[in-house]
Image 1: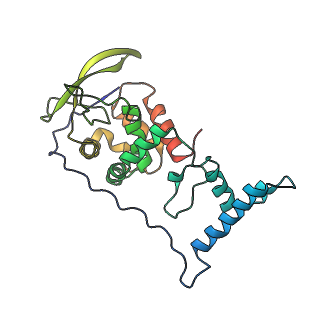
Image 2 (image 1 turned 135 degrees about the horizontal axis):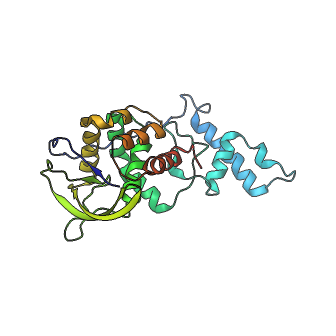
Image 3 (image 1 turned 180 degrees about the vertical axis):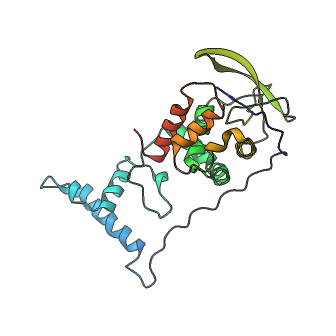
Length: 251
């Protein structure tokens, strides 16, 4: 289920620069009508709810929308890292296993860069890396056991002149899963892997339908599958399902 690149080799990758953090809102000039005042009011509301409960049995529903979100965060239902660029927690954000969240956080800057080049949402790129690397827990390795930093399972075709590593993988032939030994590209770091991944998709016309698909996880996944990125017949649905979860739009 790993991708083989049949295009000419791109130039050697360079280290990625970190994406600029989203700007957080500040309190309005002159004091208490800005975001800080709202946050204080909401926090007081939630603290009162936690301390005193609801004698009428309806305090939870009586909380404002902001209060309900802050109460969910306080009780661990929503993760601190699930904020949007406006500093307000997204209503559909859900807690993930710590290892998965750590992986997503570690690749976020490079995913944003690659996504901007490809015209897709960063969550789609993160989902692709998660699927191919088992959320970073099953990295392809080079001789000696070191990580190849190949998070996207890109094979080393005959035109690839960079470092490589051999690894066991699963390919599907006429629907049957077969275990094979293949040669994969190796990179000096994860940033280089994301840069090469973007080049592979941009330079190969087979993946044209996956580009500029925005937030559409299904279109992105199907575009990759039609281009022959993987042989797994369920690859598109697996990728779209993970992407949808990162976007908070699927179960």
